[in-house]
Amino acid sequence: MRPPRTISIVGGGHAAAQVVASLREEGYDGRLVLFNAEPQLPYHRPPLSKDFLKSAEPQLKLIRSQAFYQTAGVDLAIGRSVTAIDAGARRLVLAGGTSHSFDAVVLCTGARPRRPALEGTHLRGVMSLRNAEDALGIRSRIAAGSSVVILGGGFIGLEISAVLSELGLSVTIVEAADRVLAPAVAPEIGRFLEHLQRSWGVDIRLNSGANRLLGSDAVEAVELADGEILPAEMVIVAAGCDPNVDLAVAAGLACADGVLVDRSMRTSRLGILAAGDCVRGPRAGIADPIRLGSVQSAMEQARIAARTVVAKATPDQAVPWFWSDQRGTKLLMAGLAAGATREVVRGNVEEGRFSVFLFKDEHLAAIHSVNAASDHMAARRALAANLLITPDQVRDPAFDLQAWSQGDRDGGRSIQ
Amino acid sequence: MTRIRYVEPCGRARDVEVDQGLSVMEGAILNMVPGIEAECGGACVCATCHVYVDEAYGSTLCPPNATEHEMLDTVASERRPTSRLSCQIKVVAALDGLTVYLPERQT
Image (cartoon, rainbow over all chains, first blue to last red; front, side):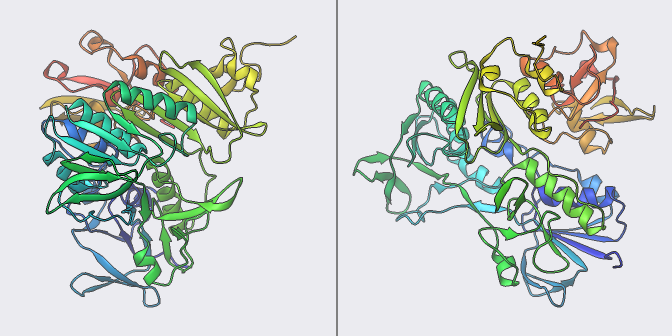
């Protein structure tokens, strides 16, 4: 198969920026066009729920500079929405009706905040957070002393809560489960963060839910399922996100809560690939394809997609990892915890410096760490190498995790 | 603007003018200095923006905090006394002329 001469990238997040960079690094020298519906170059999204909300002069951190795209010879179609893909004719249709031919296209359309079916979500002051515009909207409504209700105790909800409570807002988190960060994070860590947030004055309502949002033009309150009314000048819906699959579905690509891809990031149609938060793909050791919403996964998938386009072999998948930051408390996660049957704690929970090792039967599946970066990095090495560790070793402070992760089976405790 | 010199493992040097308030890592990314990955964008969680700083500037730099120390234990190339994560070095006037040496690998 001859190499493609025009490659289009649809999207403007981490995956899109990395596909462009990786294609050039892999030696692709044909035409590259980046179609980004957002009005700016791809930028780092994680700071939007953290520093960006509180800094006096918020600035987007570009993933790559303008100069990079120029030097790399990328045609930037910024602020241009793709409205349809004609897979047979290999054409993108743009808003306004013009079309654009491609030999290959990489869909990096990302995800969007899930909007629960709830009366009143159309009211002014009902926000969610995904992009720069959303973050600016939340910023513009920050006023010390005002009340905000966050619907959802996941990563985004907790990160926003950490910032807004620090800025003097009165914050209530409404969460349906019996703990925060369920089911993604080890329960021990969920409880730790719940206590931490409460120590900042955040009101956390577990096993709770919103009935409807009240207000005439702007939102004024949240009515909970038990009838209680929580006054709110702002409501932030942080109830997870859904992959943006509309383009793919309309183009006839196989989708199932995500654009389905193989391990080389190919969709069901020749010449169409996908990467990032919009995809669902296979994972070694897991029966069903999964959707991973993380920067690390987006970057990895982008690199793989680029290699596939230039007909290079697909490397093995790295250990997935993820981080969250709440007022300086750093949560680091490595591996996939789904289906874990046992958790073992290492370190000191009271001092806020510990890790939870999650086992699936005998095998280590994931490690979630609070303020324990070295545990996390050891975990990533160990999970990649499939190293064995026992719960007793995990609990043993004299067991040297670093030595273990570098191949010393006994963690510095050699047995004669 | 503050001038930062980035030296690649092959010895090739690049002088870059970096806005104060940005990090040494951002100076590299925005000016396409190769050899710094910075996968996490400066959150001090990935250890892929490792550099060796010129010893002459040792006393001018704020020392690494506890998190950076831990992350430095995990860098892909050798950790030396001059090792830093460049996302944690804020560019200030006193650093004008700082030289940082890039390691062989970041991952």
